[in-house]
Length: 211
Image (cartoon, rainbow, N blue to C red):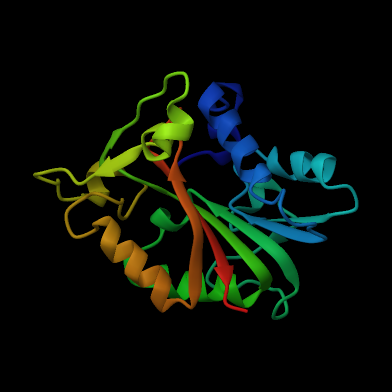
């Protein structure tokens, strides 16, 4: 059993994690969010960043762990918001902590409570290649952003060995195609997806409701 308060101490906030929080918050810059929630609050830094970058935006922290002192103590499987009550919701590095048979139901629940956008990130163990050089971004944008490749011999994921994650993209039985298909089943469309150059293990998905 992990002690959440000590787990999210100063050592947890590495440079790549700080960059991931900046990335998350920037994914709302093309809209003017008024009500945003974050499911799985970790060290609790995203809320301050949202309120600073989007003045007047109401932020709600949601977590199942009451020791983290969230605004709302609840599970992603049953969010206490009315339909379409939020403009956007974050659920980053959370869904892999839940058995995969609940992946689509969780996406459906996240979609239910927003009017527009759902941002999730998931661990990705598939291979990743990128190349950055002057002028390359314009000529080969895909290489600049990075390209994923399936591992030729993907490993079976073992929850007992890992201790926290029930599944990860790129492991046996969890190819990226399965995740993309299941996102489609949930009724959300993929506006964008990418892996962070600083830490490709995190695969971000910007999802939107069909209008």
